[in-house]
Length: 456
Image 1 (tube, rainbow, N blue to C red):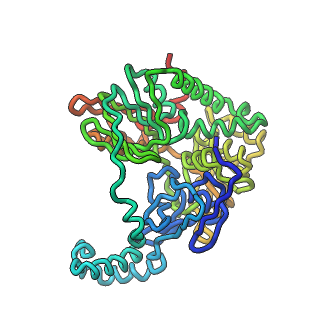
Image 2 (tube, rainbow, N blue to C red):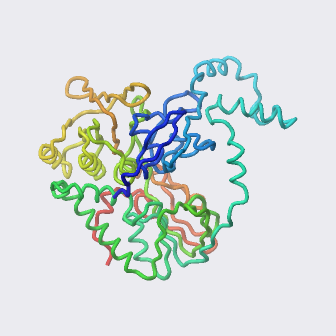
Image 3 (tube, rainbow, N blue to C red):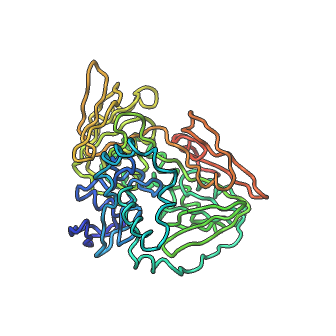
């Protein structure tokens, strides 16, 4: 559940004061003011906005308090904060592309690193002019440079028997099964992962919504049971609000929280980092307003983004289709459901949709998203003998996700291409005595695979 209060702070977006609810991220606060385009792609100048909401992509990078390339989805609003888009290059992207097409072959590779290196003032003037054109913003303000120097030394957690990264369903069960002293890490404030926060929000609706969807109720019971057992296990230490930002072979993890950096080592490392949303293949699949279910859970359930009355479309299949639609219903959005299939376990969708008042559109294939003022406006579907156009302020794509593999790869794990499990899947590894295990969605498991009996 969100910890938002009624307190309001004022930020300054491109010089304009905006009152925002304390506790929101900058990206979510701007969304509530109708500002969905946060940046533009460097090469083609296409609009970008909130996509992953977990700091894994670059679509929400903005200049905040004089510092460029700050992830606005991870940065909370505060009084007096100064926020600006930083990609002025998007304004003249078409002209720049034409010039590069015509004369780019005359420029040596890496010319921007080799030209105007001396004297120093000329180098700075060159970079000051080049960075905005390329869309990566101006250099940081001098005050930001000064504040970044001489930070506190990293805290050392020492050598542990087991470190489990990710406190979702798979991570909690791995921690419960691990012997000896175990450190369980997660960037969220409570065990259970982003789906538990979404399930709690659905359960808090109080109108029997969770009871109408028994598969969701079953998953919530499993997560709550495992979270209780974690809290009672003296040998398991839980660190919340912690991100693993790097790993060094054979056994060191670099951690970051609000207080700064820390390191930890372990004889066994279990990676339960989940998966990354994948939006699918259709025209304009990069528009702001399109996102995956994991981003929705973080924005609507954890941050408390207001979506009451919003026109929303949920496409795809599986557990996340149900949970995304239920969460949107719980926060007051208007829900249209476009399932890939209504057979087997999905055969309950028509009945549930009728009971809950969701508009159901079966047998359609998404072909194109269209924009208005840079952000999502409609979705075009083929099927039923023609074209179906659905208006949408937000659309959630529940496709097979991509296993998260960055940290295992840094620790020496091989990546195996497996399209049936979502793409590249990290393989368990052993480096200099340290065992790196991969579990849950990071190993290619579907969310439905995690809805099983808790470990005994």
